Length: 574
Ligand code: PEP
Ligand code: MG
Image (cartoon, rainbow, N blue to C red):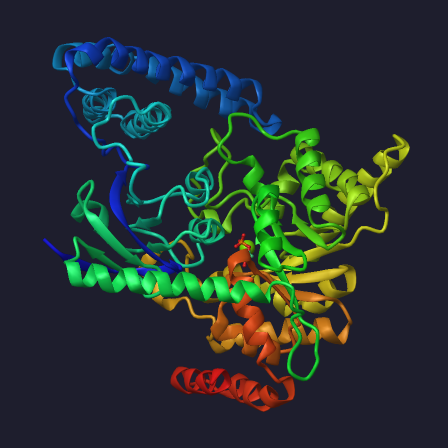
């Protein structure tokens, strides 16, 4: 049966392929019967997953962060105990042998039995431990997913495959290679969530917020995904398929044409020079940034080096990563953000269930609470400044005392490197992300103390409008054109320009063509975005005349009616 679903378009392009359903944080797994001669192998696969998880626990224990000793050890002990419960470690083996089912299914069934036992407890604390049981089972399932065994409907590689999930974390997505999947679709998520950001940087079409797609789609269903319109067509008829194949090739042709602008300078018609930089997650992304003509890296989200691993990257490993990024850009600026962990990016084994993670221990707050981790990163960053044009960016600053503390950390790290005779650029520029309304309103003091500013519109909008950027239920309220947002942007850019402090926008707004002229009109001269978008934004810059857009930008700033603002924006972009 053919049907169409609508969601939030977060990464453009058209994908046509077969559905591959995956389970992330839930225990939905496939059930299939194995031929008799595969049973021993399946049991061995289950045993290997148990063993690998045991090793993972002991590695987590030896690499645990200093401040979390008691809590963290208790957590690991409890999880190890749960894993060693015969219902999780023995019963699934017996079930595979008896029923010839796959290991994932046996584990799911036995987990449900154990969870039901916890449900019976009168004591609320014990009842809540069923969450731990599920987490242990998920850990084992992930291990099993690393060794897929003999699944009859495992992802097919002879045809394009579209990954269908209820939810995917940024850490899940970053593990995929570009083009490994033709597209991603999820039931939940918002347009500026980090999952969406990673999908864009993988250059893979993605639609989120499709609500019940995971339930309605069957493995191997034929799918068409329009990442521009947020439309998903399941089991299309022949004529629709033909139409989308045509659209797909037109879209690819357009992309190729735009890439010809790679070496052109991004000057406006009146001759103003605009810098178009790229956002990256890993040093390997540099190649794509250069291929698309980015003249610098405006945001290296260094926290991605910390995800999907059992240990944390030490100073040496980080130093190599930062040096590789710097030398890859051949003297062009590389702005590396100190790690923005917390909220939707958690270190393995340290997942906190904060009541309000976006308002909790995140970014610079987390760095200052983990001085040892922060010091190691600062040492690695400062050492790498000797090998290229690196600048350091501090995320989520909200108060001057936080900034002062951070600058003291930098000064102390410089001092210790000097005393060890290790070279670094003593003039390295330190910038701050302006992404909390408090910092935007009090911008003067930040502008005085910092060498440059970078506006994180994703968070600035989230915090100004009180909208969780990862929640599809409120995604329609996420509005970059809200007068409050525009006034904050105008204020920050205006003050930065007055103080002669370089200012950029590195949130997703910088890569949205609809806002290029508006941001230029507000006085912005530096944009940083996902690499693939650089050519399109460049084309828009090349056709913009700054004196011509000044009056209409001011009108947009003065307007308070959303329809009027949209109408004026339409005229600006005409
Ligand atoms: C932002 O908030 O706009 C930003 C660029 O940082 P991130 O998306 O990583 O939070
Ligand atoms: Mg941010």
